[in-house]
Length: 338
Image 1: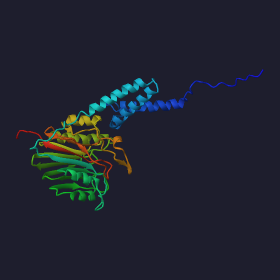
Image 2: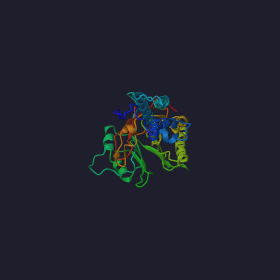
Image 3: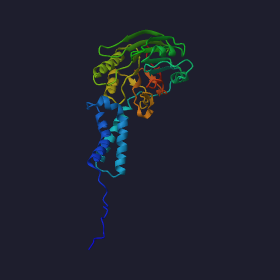
C-alpha cells in the first residue's frame, strides 16, 4: 500500500544559525560595552567617553527592540547599561555656568571662537557663513586656531578691530590669532615642553575691567599623544590659578563634557563651562561630506573664571572648516575694588 500523506511541513520557526546569533549579540552588546568603556576606570575612556550620548542612545534603541521582539535574554544587561549611560550623560551636562541676563549697566563682551581648519578665505564677493553669523552680533573678542594668512586678512576686514595679534600658518595647525575691540596690553605665545600646538595668553583692557584670555588648542586623545595632551590641559589650569585677572579660555579643547580630563580640568582650574553643553560643534563635515549635527560631539568651548557671569552659549552654522563656531555674552559680576 502506498502512503499518500506526503511530507508534512514543520510549524516550528527556523532557528538562526550560530553565526547570525553571534552577530546579533555583538550588535546588541557593543553599545553597552561602549557605555561601560566611557567611565573613568576604563583604559579606553579617552576614546569612548566622547561618544557616551551616542552609545547610550543605541543601547536604549536596542533595548526597545529586544522588548518588542520578546528577546528577554540580555535585556537586563541593556537596561542597566542604559540607566548608567543616562545618569552619566545628564550628570555631565550639569557642570556648566548658570546662564543669566545681563543687567542694564553691565559691560557685556561678545566672545567667540572658531577652529578654521587651515582653510582659505572665501573669494571676494563670495558668501561666507562665518562672516554672516558674526555680523548678526559683532564680536568684541574673537579667537581662532588653525588660521591661514588669507583667513586672517579676511577677518581683519570684518570690522575696525582695536588690536589684532596673529601668527598665521598656511600648512599646519599652528596658526593662531586673537581679534579684540579693546586694547591688548600684552601677549605671550608659548608652548609647553610636551605640547604640539601654540598657546596664546593675552591681557585685555576692557571698559568693564582688565581680564586675561587663554587661547588654546590641545591635541586630541590620540595614542602616543596623551602625555602631551595632559601637559596642555595642565597649562590651562596653571594659567587660571596663577592669574591676577579674571580668566576667559577660548579653544578647541578636543575634549567633551563626558571625559575624565574635562572633569579634572574644571576641578583643578576653578573654571566653569559656558553652556548649554549638549550642542555638538564637530564634525560638521568629513572630506566634504555633510555630517548631521546630532552625530557630532562638543569639543569647542568657552570657559570662564568665577568672576564672570554669562548668557547662553550659541553654536554657529556650518562653515568652511569641519568645526562650527561658538560665541557667548559674558560680563564681570559685582566685585570689590582691589
